[in-house]
Length: 384
Ligand SMILES: [Zn+2]
Image 1: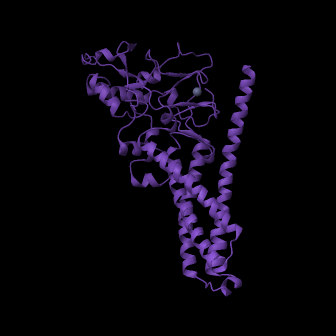
Image 2: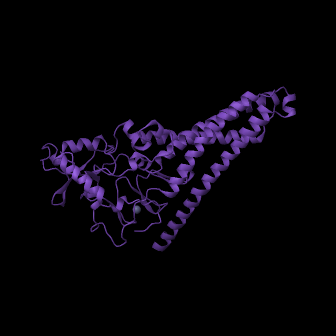
């Protein structure tokens, strides 16, 4: 039983991996076809240098129009190609996998060193971080076990075979950029084909199948990319991954670094657990309300955490997202308003804990110690 389940899982993984290569190839072929129709059939053979039978039907050569449309076509195609290559490169080489744990390690005994330095992290009712049975390791906040890769993925968004695999914290930005440019490109091809096909039907009474297929493909992919872009960007502005949207409505248990100060008496009753990590570090476990998103920092800050801090970063597929730099002490990711408010209410976190000097010392000691969860692992095949 367990064996056949494993075999089925392996087969599913293989099918997904093949789809994640075939679909991008299909998209590239579709773009090649659109280029043939727009560049050669429409701009060259219809506008710039029409065939004799087209000219005799009263359609004059329109060189200026043809060249202008060609220039716009390639200006729109270029960023689509660049963002798609960057997206595939990141998805295929650096999907953001969490290192595997020791196969013998168990939740009860595994060390929590990675979490003990944080001001706050997502936990269970006893204050332990989330555990992945398949990877034998702790899950950093927002990580999700992907059945397609068989590994935990940081800030996993969804499995997208059209984009070559897993969309996660490393590829989210390039995915959004690709969708943005692809919407503009497919929209342009759609409008172009619609206008000139209508003209051709009107003046020549001809409906070439090549043009109709290009129009239909452009319409289909325009709707698809625009829909994906709109929903992905909206969720990004709320700091939700697609997985978190599906799980929206639940509560989160959050372990907060407890200070020496006494918590506010009115809120003291909400503490569901207290844990002592070391003689100097203890945590309290509190809960968010349903539908509260612990990472929602406000629309602009949410967008910046993925897209980057400057306009150039928003549009260029070069730098990784700021949220991928896991060097902060406050949490795996920057916390949103809900958690910051809790820290204030409970006087929790290193901000409330002693002097600034202590915070600085902790930060510098962290920089010098190597952290297994933050090692620069990039491929899912590496075993620890
Ligand atoms: Zn896992």
